[in-house]
Length: 405
Image (cartoon, rainbow, N blue to C red; front, side, top):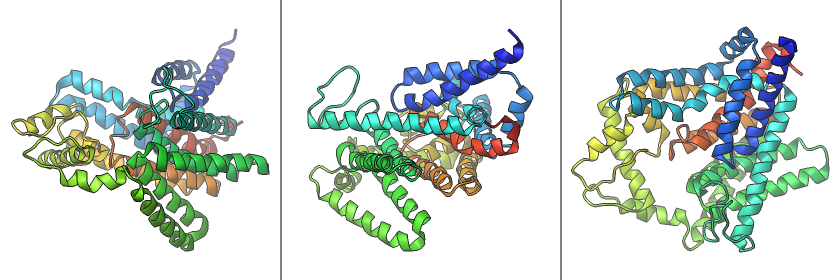
């Protein structure tokens, strides 16, 4: 068999696995890892390395993602935790290095469309199963992790709520592109169910904030600032309705925050996070320029709270602080530039609905990273890399028209 035929088949395999990853990300970490291994092996076997390098270097999103990853690699050399912990932490950010690969693999419109449909199918399955769990029609089983009180399906409520918040936006995007009235109604119904799942069933506070922010973003981008007034009114009404429910996590937040103390152990979620933020900010201020190195957070945090009643943690639940402690202002600037780059380049995408979807991804992670270490977490970090490549591959495809379908 000719080498060109082998390269072509390897390329097709890598593209198919990249599409399948859209279904896997909201469902299975094990399947994610299998698909990532296949993608890397097939992508390397497909050859044409000069073109691959050209695609990566000519795509600013790919360059920005690689820059942050390279800084994390460099951070191992001076990490307070040593090479072993540094390498372990670097592995959690490995998804950033896949952005150039996804940019190359999603150069065809057909793969991009199928990938979003695969991701939407996984979210639709999550909505159906979560609703069945909440209603008591689906008993506890080995395939799902939730119960009637917390109807998680494949991921914990925090991740599920963030995915479904973005998913509600994606379903509206797909409804706008629907070819028939029936298809449009199905996508809009899924968008409504996704929003209800976030606001009422799982009640992940980060997901709720993301959903409300995306609602305002959609209103402004579609109807201008006139739409912002209506969106703001809707947000206020939704918050008022949500806080009226007994046991609402939003209602509990102020009380949990007031319960925090630097001299007494705190058990509430909000109280613990507030302590993490305060201590992490103090550590970041003590090492402002290049931080304490990749993988050093656990060590320096434990030293900082030693001898106090405050709880140790391996995760500040804030990606900005997480990067700032490890890489200082240099790393934080690289992370912010990555978000800034995607926001600006979204305006260059060919269609308005694609521009809105790309900026919805940025909004999701700008907000999510304020309350969670989303680039370090496997599922969220992989989704960011996959979706970034998927959305901004069009820029690379436009520069290399010979490779388009």
